[in-house]
Length: 567
Image (tube, rainbow, N blue to C red; front, side):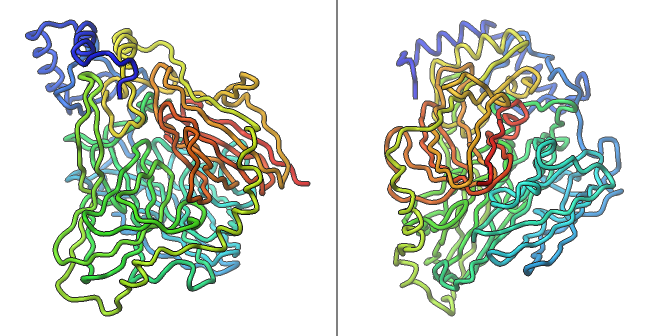
């Protein structure tokens, strides 16, 4: 997608004007870059992995982020820490309490033994299960050096337990504990993660799912089994994970894209099923920045639910686009014997060359056996159900669908003190603007940018207030229409997964096109240049956050609080 409409050769020539080194000098810089890969640099940094087809920017050969490098357990022998174990199910009934420790663990990923974090020493954290409308308690004890909290993403719980430091609770310091009381009024798959330096803590393993069970045995259609599918990535080189910024997040422009893909915390996830088996996958994206396009080979897939409940109607899909923090429930039937890959299939981009190209990452494999499944659900699987209760619930809000927006937000970015070669190159980069950043197409420039230099912005277009200055006030029972426009005219246009705490919303329209099959959400992605209309039910009193769920964008200021008063 080329915003200016300039011919490709002209764009290439303009890019060449920025990277002015002659071929020999360019080759020398790329060789120098290759030598730096995996080598220690100033401040404890190692050069971020790069596709060598992307030219080195002149003047940045020895550049590092303007903060010190940091990793959990740096300088410590990983053998000091217990080996992490796979996620375990923690079934809770109304009134039960679960003890959760936040601790350092030992993991081996992509052949590298390393120190990471874990909830109860597990990857992902415990799969908490609770019945709908229950209240369960989770006592969290912090055994790591960093202060932390837990945000219970998507739950319409009491505000004091939302896990936002400085707003709903004090940070949990090392050696301290905090008791969360979780109300779970909605059935579906939710998740939990820190809300302090999640660019580090979440990326290093602090995430887990919470499955809320409906009392209705027919809430979902029949399936032979249910499988959580937590997709993630991590950035590594031949020595292990690339360090993080000690006092500020790096990768502030695009967010920290990983180059090693994971499902359920491992790089070699697999599943064995019988022929004809219907598997219900609960998808959660816990990556810092990456939006996945998940495919299931040629197996038929139908989408059933998303963040906070079921769709009005089940529907067939070719793939599932899932942004950071989103969840989707899909039923997949495997009719043919053999091995099938679950993939992330995208149109990647190279910002320097102005090109797009197909790219496929294998996330996991499914081995379909030769024997037929004992209980065949083919007939029910091939029936697309309408969820009458969902339609009836949403019908109560349709009178607001055509109203004018109550508030409008614009997303943009402001930068300062970035190296001049980055500024020059980024000016040229906006000659073409993809609606989605599927991959890190400028890894060195992204790595060198920190939250001290980049401020991502949510701007109230009515008042001009930005981020923490925004002061919206509502009352319980209000229904609020919000329009979010992701301008393509900023220093670096970027898609944003927009998350609202403590409430639920409907995505009514994208770029003026109405959504015909609605579902309650807590997070929705806004592509570059797009305008999204959402309808928020203000049902939960308290002071709540709204923010971009790219971890580095949140660390760079892209958030505000709003107040919902009890009537």
